[in-house]
Image 1 (cartoon, rainbow, N blue to C red):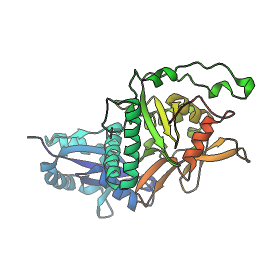
Image 2 (cartoon, helix red, strand yellow):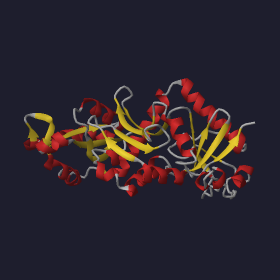
Image 3 (cartoon, rainbow, N blue to C red):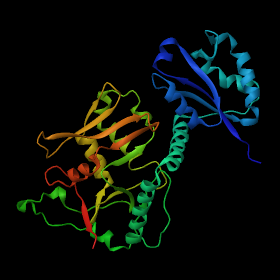
Length: 341
């Protein structure tokens, strides 16, 4: 019989660190607990210790820890302790022969990310959700008729049959027509390692829904590190750590499918994005473009209290604007258009 698992955790934020304290708690649902803390914390915090334990032992563990850590309680509040306890909990559990598993940051982020995906599937309105699924099914009926299921995980949305004619069209080396007003970087030749795709549509484009620890309390100098930014978008847009990374980004317009090489988009963002951090904590990304001011804001990373989630992407109609920027002959990158007949 499979054992039910729960978590012991400690939590910190800037204020806790200044006071040299941490919050100690237990939970059966780490994702929900994280959301509750984020909602209540004046300064957004994070888990700095998470330990997996058997649920049936949780009450016993809580009582043992209260006795063991009693002298470290902060101002008679049994939830807050001197932060020295962070290094004391696992050794203590070991002395009591209590099963425990220390979770690394990557494991914690995976649990939080999975929880976000489950919640998103529950909360997304049926119209929007069905529209997204319809587009994915429409894509597969056009480019991979042998597959009729939808991918729900944090990975590529779909794939192209490697024998489909579009795969050959993506590899065409068109002649240099720059003298006629078309610049070489707007031509095709989208050679990729796989034909797994991320499908986008509409006026707004979501890159990632959920907390991105790499952007927590980040400074502008770090955002200006192109390799750092590239790693973030590889992880959260290309899904490079998943079992099925997306090597193509395909945008569904009203009368066409527009194909981009995912690496080209990520290189474009890391090389050309001008980052700003607002006093509110929001992060904005600007690009030089064809507008009157020759520069506009496109990318946003922000926490949305109404939805209790973080958003990274292109909102306020900037999704379609960004696609047009990528296709612009002066500012854009390589792409291929497959017109819908």
